[in-house]
Image 1 (cartoon, rainbow, N blue to C red):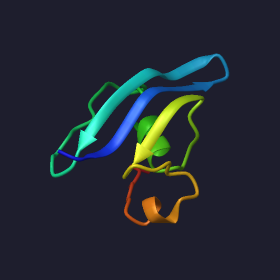
Image 2 (cartoon, rainbow, N blue to C red):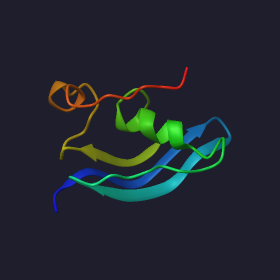
Image 3 (cartoon, rainbow, N blue to C red):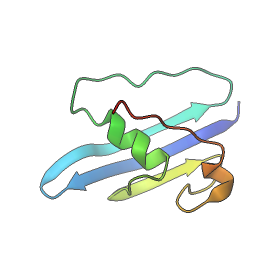
Image 4 (tube, rainbow, N blue to C red):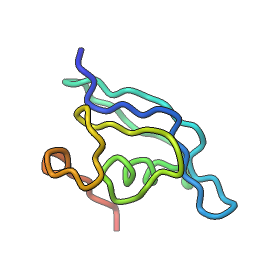
Length: 84
């Protein structure tokens, strides 16, 4: 299968608070995934980093094989709707 999203060692800190700590995963094409966790687990933070609405403190994110930040080829193919 082809990887659509590849995340390696993703960490996001807000000051002294660690929202996402060294997360790695791969999302394959033509597959449905769920991102589950309690409130405050970092789900929205991960999604906002994948859609270039937030920056990682460290780690690598590739969407469709490219970095999503300021990348029209990637961002034009994504949609992230926040609850609020």
